[in-house]
Image 1 (cartoon, rainbow, N blue to C red):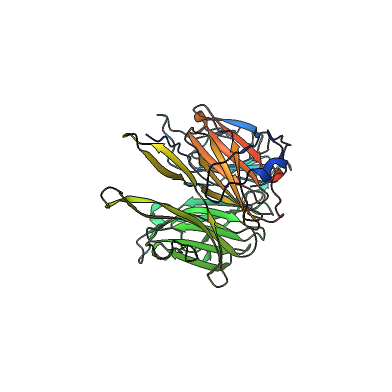
Image 2 (image 1 turned 135 degrees about the vertical axis):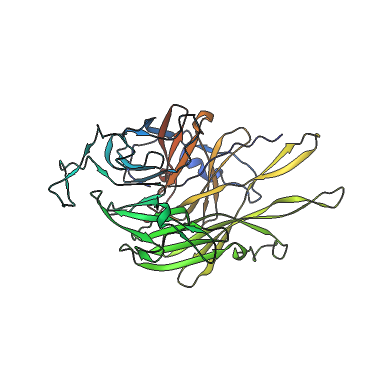
Length: 438
């Protein structure tokens, strides 16, 4: 029996925070490159900083992650961070709350029908009937009502405008004639003061709803990138800061790129998309694809299912939709004893979190349940491995966010509280100032 620890990935922003100390000096990094064959080597342990924790409940300084019976809530809870300020979209709580790095609630947008009257934050009221400007104390500590239905993905741009996924009511949902997908998700836009501006659909402001959302990003230029999917394809809609649609990509499952430059070409590989994220520079996408091939039973020479073959990241330039670069990402090769006593080889496939500067970040867990982050420098093609501290009782709910300069933040849900932590990888990598600021 091979023990596999499941990690629920949800990537998310960056900022200046408290200093960290690493268990091993950064000077050791050059000795930590993983071999080209993907052998599991030594790792650097990166110190985790627990910034604050949130209890479970309906208040503005609480999260709703679990139902009364203890089951995980079916809606998303997403995290993003910018300049040391954390934004948490709590789907089951129908609210988006902005926290300081010490856990102080700074502002909130919430469904007043599904939440109690704010206590820590005062509910903002219009200056006069019909006024859209809230009566504020000037400190930005306010709670603004908005009739959220199902908040999820979120992003914050450099002007602190907030972009939030929400779901339309049943009477406004649309069935796509070509794919049959249910189109019922939109991107709500809020100003720096928390006031609702408008919403983005597929064509831009007020457009057709999106299918199921996988990701929402604000890149360095303040462009907004929406990644969604149907049963037959993935979609990427790229908007400028004013909500004008700049480009659309439709990537069918049958059209996933193949590793043509490798020795695997022509082997009938099965492609499985891991993740699509915008690149940190330029209007381009990073697309990670894992490939599988038929496994042959050596005794019977018959097919024994599928086995892992390789993983690749492709960079697509959205100007012409062409793949302009590719990098092979090696999995971690492992050997285990099967029930019959024979040795069985298998691979642990790191999942893509995102990119910081020229460095790709991945996450995976080993057989003992320890969590690791691996990095791949696209310039030098060097790979390194880092251990991060996540306890077994913190796996009830996980949401991750990687900033453009390499700060990895997370919500770690236990039975009793949600812990907001980060690991300062920005101290270990050389990255540019531009990047994903989702």
